[in-house]
Image 1 (cartoon, rainbow, N blue to C red):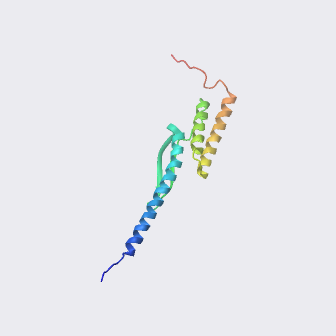
Image 2 (cartoon, rainbow, N blue to C red):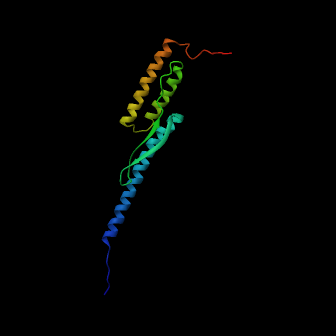
Amino acid sequence: MFDVRYNFNSLYSSAMNQQKQDLINKNYNEIYHHEMAHKAAGGNLAGSIVIERNSDGIPIGGHVAIKMPSLDRNNPQKTIDDANTVIRSAMAPSDPSAQDYRVANQARAIKSQAMQIKNTNPALGKKLDIQG
């Protein structure tokens, strides 16, 4: 007589571990590609990619810090250029999130203020100051 026993707990556990690993890989890849689009478009204004995980180690979100431009009244064109970079970075992924839209809108507001300053004084930032 042959004694054949299956360890169903082991098979079940192995299948569950594989499903979990598949989910980790899928989520990580989706999140990483989204965040990499932000980073690539953000250039020197973008920080590192951060992937957030739940208590089971499954990736659930991510972010890339971006340096929001401050309004430079002496050089509004720099503010405009930096705001354009932030807008491009925020909208770079094919699936922008609600937070991405908020960041883009904040940069658009700063850009609008800089454009008003520039339009009010078109020579601003074009003068060469020589000190001696």
